[in-house]
Amino acid sequence: MIREPTKTSRRAFLKGAGALALAASGCIHVSRRSNGILVNDVQSKLNATCVDEVVVVRSQTQLVSAIKEAAERGRAVSVCGGRHAMGGQQFLKDGVLLDSTKLCRVLKFDSDRGTIEVEAGIQWPALLNYLLASQHNPARAWTFAQKQTGANRFCLGGALASNIHSRGLKMRPLISDIESFTIVDPSGALRRCSRSENRDLFRLAIGGYGLFGAVYSLTLRLVPRQKLKRIVELLEVDDLMPAFSRRISDGFLYGDFQFAIDPASGDFEEYVRYYLSTSGNVYWSDLHQFSGYADDFHEHVDRRMRAPHRASEIITEIYVPRPLLSEFMADVREDFRKEKVTLIYGTIRLIERDDESFLAWAREPYACVIFNLHTVHTSQGIQHSAEAFRRLIDFAIQRNGSYYLTYHRFASRGQLEACYPQFSEFLSLKRKFDPGDLFQSDWYRHYRDATS
Image (cartoon, rainbow, N blue to C red; front, side):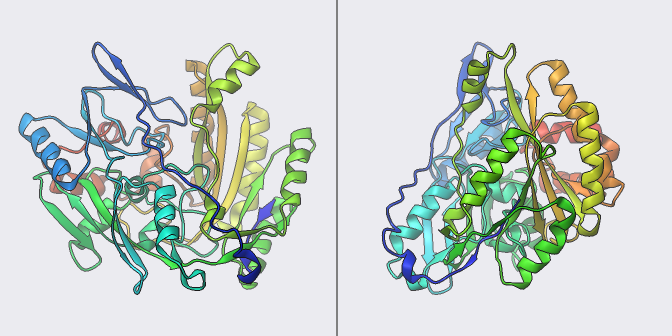
């Protein structure tokens, strides 16, 4: 199914548009144990990690002080925000965890240039609330171009560190929306990075998973806020790329394709019926990217299903050259049926080439295929999902594709090096900018050790 909103007139949509209330979350998922503080990600719940200390920083001064103190004590640090990353990028066993969620102020809004500087811990709902409250002319209002979908309480510092993307039909990853940022380096110095100042660090830190310093603030390039009309169409995957091309030619700005591998199932019919009923709805260009997500919803599902073991969903994102999407999906369909892989949902989007970030995942204009797999929290269940993810990556590699590093650490060394041939140089530059290995994570240690 393809859902691609486009522009429509403003007049009929203004009345009552300010009624939505959005709130950021400062929740800290912490459990104390005798040997440390147990933290975990909020989605997969498969990254339980005992850290030595959690330091909640509330200002630039506190952030600098915390980093200097950790360096003096010889303690490695990691940085977390909304704790959604599933690959262990925000946690470090026995390390010092810097919690950035209280770094949530707007520092400067330039309504003439269309830029906004915010602290790295601010989350998308709070940013939107500020923009809505600060602008009183709906005919000329600014907003952000893209955010992660599927949930809302992501910190912008984490979005920068993983170089996220949304469902824009002609957009590059988030780096294209970042004017500049400030980062506290391993010495405790605050450095401003942009395309003209500290350019190497700019390219490395965006998509660098927090390994080059702690981002204090970032300046986003904004876009005009406008209204979008959703158009929903039921398609076969073989017809998808021509449909995307038609929508782009017609001026559509956003869109994706949500797929199922069993169109004969009852839940698929219900899903189709619901989304077809939303065709024609009108949304603001920022609000249509928001969606509800209950952090602990799967615990309620497990109880209602009387599941013998806890479970959750793990995401992976695979990149495939657009002309080869249909044959890739045919291989996946056969594989998932043969191996009894439980796909909860899948989405296909487009991405344009990223020629700026060092560890770029969008090496060319790709079709992005997101798979959300049900994963039982047993060694057998986790292994079953891990093997499925590795097979998906192999299918992509066979077609000169790639995968997103953020969601898991299941890829083999060969797969990592095939998809990210610059990774060894990335680690070398990490050692150059951080010779004392102050900024670390379980994700970093995994790949550092795997490639050493």
